Length: 361
Image (cartoon, rainbow, N blue to C red; front, side, top):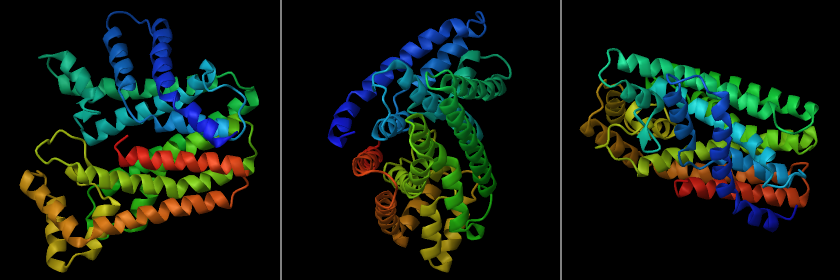
């Protein structure tokens, strides 16, 4: 379809998504009617998923679906419901990710396990209860994501293809999470750039960018060649997104708020940290290693890491890498089997993602 018309349609989508998300959970209320004990957990689940976010995944899905010839109107409830399955999948990942990282805030509010813990008040074992319930609620969100996509009003063949792809992306995301956990305690000097990039690809790129576009293409009835080409486009785009997110997090970082879930506070092995380590001298490398492995990261040690990152020149290098990766994504797009209007529409989607991250979404 015409890309300017698609862009115009996209302007109304965020509001439609939020409206349908609320209506979706209202319809689910009877399905999850398990009595007074479960009711507050269900409401917390609704609130958590409904928190304001970028909605990158459902929006990319809808963009791709329409760009590649999908016939359903963007306001079609069943189409938006299929898009919401990707947001439910994202919520599942966030609940478990926060649990693994022991984060206390998500989108400015308590993480799910902290919400449950707070509801327990002074009851013994409140922390463990919160963690246990959050673990299972994450599983419920995964089941709901799969169920929602499975019940969408597409042909059984297309639904089966889309569901198969979704499950393969979930597997990749899980393996990426394992990589992230295993790299956590490893010394930065023993972590390669390839290790980190593979973690980014599996943990974030596949389900954030590739899944929405490929599933959108499948449900639009696009050819397998076009779906495969979109996956190739999304790989450099996803890496650029993650690097840009790391840079944005660094620029907005406030060491006084120790509850913020940041990779810098958690000592994660990001490409920004790796690049700084590679560029620093021996003494500064030792300081960086010491700060990253300190069991209690206080304001002084975090400030030192920030100083070392600036001193290394890694920030500018990573900014240049982002620019290069966005160009690579556009080059892959130009070489794809997509038609000219399809390419133009996807190029606009790429630019939308770029801008949404730049301004913090």
